[in-house]
Image (cartoon, rainbow, N blue to C red; front, side, top):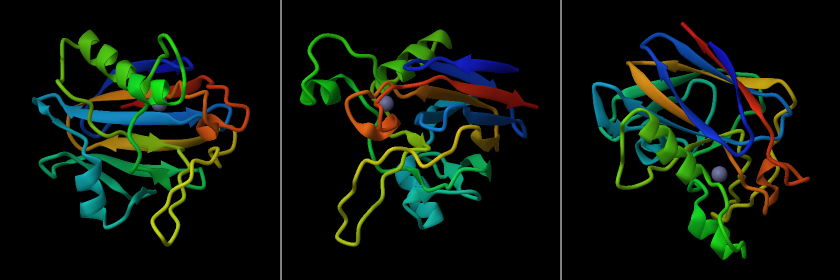
Length: 197
Ligand SMILES: [Zn+2]
C-alpha cells in the first residue's frame, strides 16, 4: 500500500509484525512525527524516554530499536538514506506551542493529528506521548542547549521502520510553519508513505 501523506495532516496505518513502513521525504524538507501503538494492548505506546535509555543515545539512527513504555520492541529503524540523527527530544507541536509563537486562531498540529488518527481506529488517549521526529534536525551542544535547524535530508531520502509486533503506526507531516524546522522556507510539504509486507 502506498499513499501521499498530505502536508500538515496525519494518518494511522496498520503494520503487522515483520512488515515495514517506508517514509519517503519527497522534498527533503519535511519532518514526520511518528508514534506506534500495540494492537493487542493499545495502552502500550512508543516511548522516547525508554527508547533513549535502551539505545543509550538521544538520537534515532539506523539500527535504533523504538521500544514501548513497557520496553517491548516496537519498530526497528532498519534503513535510512538520510544523514540520520532523527530527533527524540522535542515534543510534538500542539495548540499551546502555536499560541506561544503568536498564532491566533486554529493551527493544525501534530498532537491534533495524532488524536484524529487514533479516533479513526476507535482509540483514544488522555495524553499525547512524545513523538519520534523523523528527519527533524535538532543538534545538541555540549552545554545541553538545542537548536531547531532545517532538515538535512535530501529529496527522496527515506527511512524504513520494521514492525516487531502488530502495530498501529501514526504519522504526521508536521504543520510547523513558524520556525525553520520544516525547511528554511517554512512551508510544510507532502511525503510519500509505503507499507511493505
Ligand atoms: Zn509538528
